[in-house]
Amino acid sequence: MHITSVATKAYPDQQFGTSGLRKRTQVFMQHYYIHNVIQSIFDSLKGFEGKTLIIGGDGRYLNSEAIQIAIKIAVANGFGTIIVGRNGWMSTPALSHLINKYEAFGGIIFTASHNPGGKDGDFGIKYDDSNGAPAPLSLTSKISERTKGIDRFWWADIPDLDLSVINEYTFDQAVVKVINPVTDYAEYMAEIFDFEAIQKLFASGFTMTFDALNGITGPYAKYIFEEQLGAAQGTVVHGKPLPDFGGCHPDPNLVYAKDLVDSMFKPETKDFAAASDGDGDRHMILAPNLFINPADSLAILTEYLELIPFYKGKMYGVARSMPTAPVVDDVAVSKKIPLYVTPTGWKFFANLLASKKVAVCGEESFGAGSFHVMEKDGIWAILAWLNIIAKTHKKPQELTYELWTQYGRTYRLRHDYEGVDSGAAQEMFKALASKLPNLTGTKMGQLQIKEAKVFTYTDPITHEKASNQGIIVTFSGNASVVFRISGTGTVGATVRMYFAKKEKELDAVPAEVLAPLILTANTLLQTKKYLGLDAPTSIT
Ligand code: G1P
Ligand code: ZN
Image 1: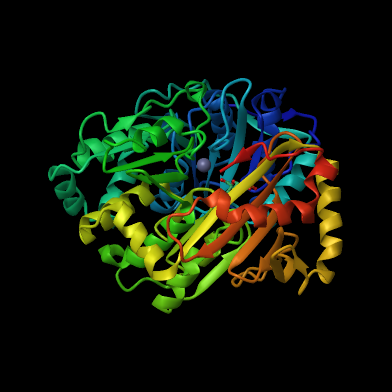
Image 2: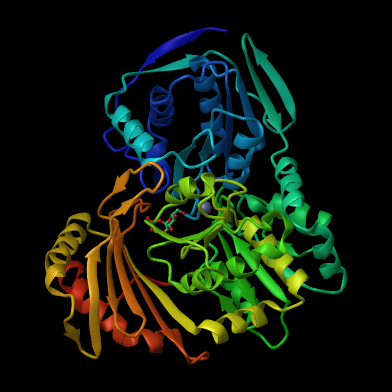
């Protein structure tokens, strides 16, 4: 095997965001674009010689090519063992689990998560650290910096490997292992959850649909739900990972999982439905005629997780991201456990999970997880729901209404203005930020502002400071609005506004409850003036 140094030219746009580097697929198809990113990752790490690296991807267009490139550069840089999922497939949470299980130095996953795939879709690269968590800010900044100065990468002159069969390939000091990406993860889930209780639930006639949206979770779900837990054949739909996700947008929400949602809003439905995203870290939960939003779902998981033996005596605390409606806050108070509020992005949860400050965390964007892996985990969340249903003998809709009756119902909505001009968005936020000091205590229409501030977070473990993590305005009457610019957008800027308001009334329409708040938020941010838009491009 020859190892050579290949000259390359730096790209100016390889800045890591909320979740690694995410861009249009065609951007990644530029000459040595992927090579530069991978070598920049390795150049930012120390001490990996002879160690293990896990590599996988969510099966989207360019996945196979990217994996072959990553293998060659990893071998050339001196990794000892490289573990790759069969077909190059691996879900994000499974990658995190394998890093821990095989005590790997780290892992690379090719995914743009819930963004569409294909040649005209999106692609991405993310690095997970040796604890299986997304690289912390200090490391992603280092990698971003390195991409600007890179002028060579190391290359091992080895053939492309057949990734469709489980096999091992040895090249001098390095071994590349192609493994079944599903079995280790499935075994771990069986350790965490009471599979027997869930088997009984399905045996008693409980019905469910799981929509993999043609993303990576299909093979995991078929094996776990249908083969191991005895859910009916056909429970899993859109179960084959496709390079373009079959033209779908693999994002489990009311807009993009519409078929599944419609199937649950009918007189006759399944007892339960769920979906996951392209790389398997997000999930959506539905009951008959009811969408259980992520903030409520996190609260219910927190309320009942200790019924699952793995978590008994381990409810250390709970965390939610700042834009997530504060439903779990009430559960934390009632359970007398600490609550942490973090900036957007799973990496902020990772330290809390690893240091056992929290047992469970979740974000409004359909992500939840626990200390079992350092990434959010869609299949885990669905299994947790099934386990709780099996243990409490309560239907998902009953669990939700009980939560609302106990604490009140928090209505929430998110408005996104996607692909807007970056400069205009920055200016708009600057303008609002400059007004904040004078807003506290003022009245806008019917609403009284309690506090208006830019959210800054100091990590309680590393003391790393994350500034400028969005703007939060709280109003009297249990209402709040959060404004922020997305860190995962691939074109221009995406502005997000999150609305939440708690009410005693349980069956109101969210858009009606939140209408005054939405009006006030738009007056504050002046979306029309800066973006020239009358309405958001997406409401979820
Ligand atoms: C979005 C979500 C965020 C999530 C991230 C990665 O980031 O809002 O909660 O962690 O995707 O899945 P954003 O585009 O808002 O920066
Ligand atoms: Zn994802």
